[in-house]
Amino acid sequence: MQQTDLDRIDRRLLAELQEHGRATNLELSEAINLSPAQTLRRHRRLEEGGIIKRYEARLDSTALGFGVTAFIHVTMERGHIRDLSKFKGLVAELAQIQECFSVTGDIDYVLKVVAKDLKSLSDFLLDTLMRIPGVSGVKSSVCLDEIKCTSAMPLDL
Image 1 (cartoon, helix red, strand yellow):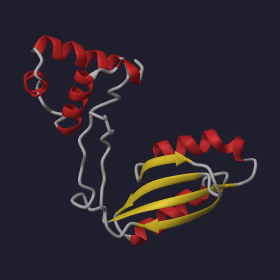
Image 2 (cartoon, one colour):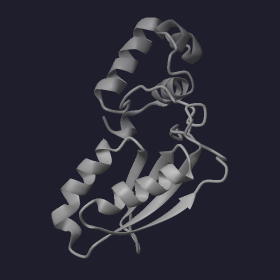
Image 3 (cartoon, rainbow, N blue to C red):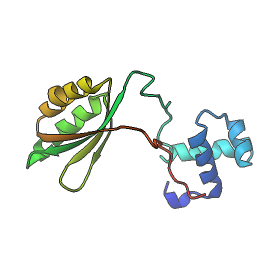
Image 4 (cartoon, one colour):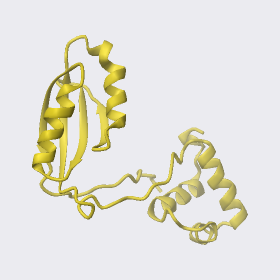
């Protein structure tokens, strides 16, 4: 499904799902003023078309004991292509890494990492991240305050 295939009703449905992911089909249909059958049909089409990737609960990291969030800039060795699949595989396995982006510029990757405390972050950087083949350097920025954190997409309603 292409983005251009989305009409105003699809966008309203997606907006409602982003805000209320556990809403029932009846609640969704009332919110977007569409019959339950049509709402369900559209909802399934959005899932099958890959617009809705998955559903998940958003957890409070601090309440779970993760007091530190850091953004890590990773630089790979020149010619790191040979280690790229190993790097990606390890990043996917490491639960502390919340997000990973390949970026342009002087660095190769930006990671969002959570840790219990600064010592745990230091241990992760030195004992895990720096030991991944191909990694030549890391620079970290510790988050002081979370101003905005969302996964909601702008839908231009």
